[in-house]
Image 1 (spheres, one colour):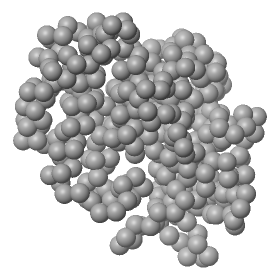
Image 2 (tube, one colour):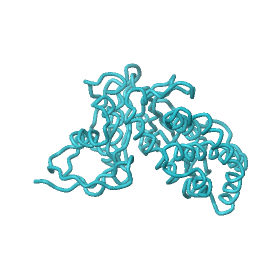
Image 3 (cartoon, helix red, strand yellow):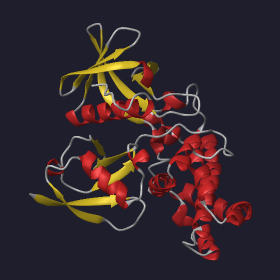
Image 4 (cartoon, one colour):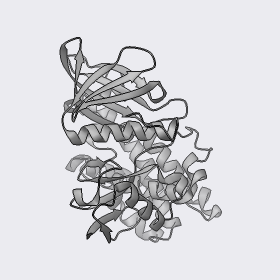
Length: 342
């Protein structure tokens, strides 16, 4: 029996509805959607579907899901820190790269890239030690740094829209507010940022256009936007899961964090233990994991090439399947495509 599935493709504004057989899996649906987005089979394995904030494993069927499915790049390729070197994804598949930019751009505009959790607010201390160890900066210093980062990112998005002929240069400068991420600033802070952007962004955009417009392509500046986003807000590209860790019979509340690969670093699974001082422990890099056993819908055992197995209990079945799909997917992409960890 066929059923209608609503799909949100992030490289376009309109929502798509397709008719699918109810026993169609997410993996099979991905093939169809990748063809529609002109994403090559080489890059297709980097994508997955997300629904209502949770990732769907490849084996889930259409009949098991209700609500819109969002196609997103989940498995990030390692990239160069230098802005002079082209993105690996751009070299492998320009269409997949364009889609990834549209995905990050949409999240940036919605405030999901640089929200308070990423900016390092006090009530989100779980996230801070992973990327920003040591003492926290004062709020004023963080705000100044955030505003400078906003100028670089907002200015690039403005220049991209002008180069892609989405909007005229005069109009883009009149609509500075629309380029600021939602819900990031309070009223006064937003007014100060808008004033700062209005005073500086025109010259900054002109400088970018003079540098990149002769190439007649916005691909390089999009590449820079993605690299700067990762530099300024690295936790945006991480995924985390609440869990319990069995340490010799003593159960600890922890957070499992999967960090994507970078130029000189593999995919890494990190455990953050909650306490007066949060303790960060590297569980394993992706090449060190040799097997993951599932004991029940929420309990997993991670076996490594060196060291004793580690036992975790996730908070829900969906968290378990999401974590397993993430680790298995990264292992297949980075280590051996024909082998699954569990």
